[in-house]
Every structure is written in C-alpha cells, then in structure tokens.
Amino acid sequence: MSSSRNSAVSVTRLKRIWEELGVPADYAEARRIPLQREARRLVAVGRNRDGRIVRLTPRAAAAWRRMCLAAARDGVALQPISGFRSVRRQAKIIQDKLAEGKAIRAILRFLAAPAYSEHHSGRALDIGSPSAPDLSAGFARTREFRWLSDNAARFGFHLTYPRRNRHHIGYEPWHWCWRARSPAESCSADLIV
Image (cartoon, rainbow, N blue to C red; front, side):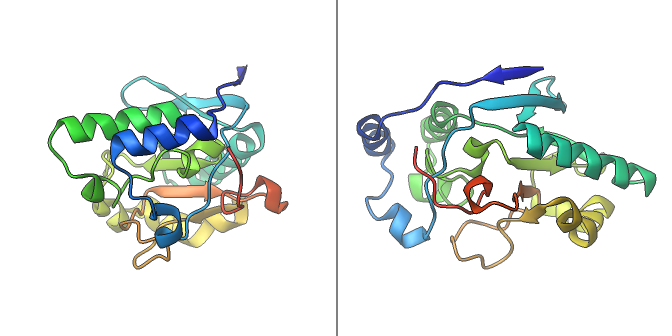
C-alpha cells in the first residue's frame, strides 16, 4: 500500500505554528537540530497496538522488514509504534500536551518541534516490544532493545537520542532512524521543509 503526500508546509505557516505553540526562537540553534522534509511516498509496515497503520518510506520499510525477520529468527519481537508523522500531526500532539497544562519546554524535552521531528522524514520509527508496550525508558531493559543495540546498524537503523545526546532531547531508547547511504536520504541530513 503506497500513498503520495503533498502536505508541505510553508515557512510562513511554520513560523506561525512555532509562535502559536511557544517554541523558543532559538530552538533549532540551541538544539543543533536540522529541519526535516515531510516524506512524499509512504508504505504501510504494520499496525500499532491502537490499530493505526504505521508508515515509512519504501526503502526504510524494506530495511524494517529485513530487520524484523532477522530479529524473529533470534526470537525477538519488534513492534512498530509510530512511523511517519506530518508537521501538522506533530503540532497537534504538542497542542494537546499544552492543553493538559504542560509547559512547552518540558514538552520539547521529548518531542521535537514541528518540522524538526525525524518522524516527518518517514525514516524514523518508535519501536516497542511485548514486554515494554509503552514509550518509556524501561524499553532499554528489554531483550528487544539489546537486540537492536547489537544488530540495528546492520540494517541501517540508529538510535537517535541516546543519553546526553547533542540535541538535548531526552533519552529515547525506542526511537530509531534509518539512514540511507546517501546523505540526502538520511534522517540526520539538513533538509528543508
């Protein structure tokens, strides 16, 4: 199942979103975090435990499938929790947290500002396991995390937010990003929206 996305957000609209959310003006510079382009071609890689379809770019999806097969051969069950997320969806998640009374700085500790999330690229994946179904630091104590730490790089996946990462994002043992051989396709590339 493939879909084409044409939901690019203008820079003017992005600035308005950041202002409405209260994203600090120096966010990108202080975090040393690049803009991420929204993926245009996506394929389904499964459903999360809530029944929502998880999507990645075709090449990241192929790498995910290969990695899941290898993990299964080792008796490890990797579960997709979240893949592609649009800029608009990222803004909505932050708006919901603000409505719950959370401060923007606390929110941005674990969520990238809209246009800066690797999930926009369609190459980032939040991964869970049967023993750690929620996004929590407890995932780092699972067999699945140990397997990913030892094997994910063979499939092009890398842990983006380890402890004390350069982006000052909280430790996210569940967040892995596929990095293509070409810098233009990599989660870590400086992309424009």
